[in-house]
Image 1: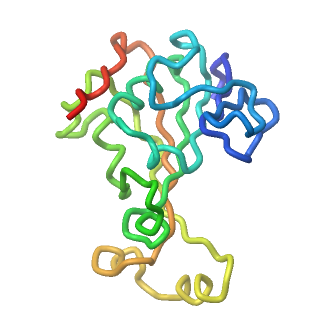
Image 2: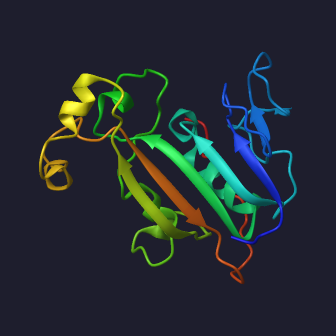
Length: 186
């Protein structure tokens, strides 16, 4: 990647990572900084981050457009946003009552260059990767992973995959990216 800047682990929970600025809301969680990811702007300078990591965090936040705008603001040009979320067509996504958003392999396209429906936001990322993954932690998952044609069957059946990994890049040399204001309260 070669971009200078901070490495942020936002919503770190119990996954404290050496070499990252680990951030979480909960004061009893080991973190370097404690703040609410639902309240933008975050306490970092614009363009300060070479990498931002969110591992099973985005689905819990209130205003996805505002958060994505803030992440874009924090990234340096060429910086990478790495996101893991539950796959919207899985029990993992649907069973948790704290999930507010559901994602498919196309969800981040709305924030990316070249997507017809990216007019919701005034900033753009470049999509580097959108990869479905399936865990193999138990017998049921290992058996499920043997099902042939899963990449096609996912359009018709649930629970063929567990999550999605997205990697986005802030394009270098693009226009300045204002943070998206939070949506008005109902």
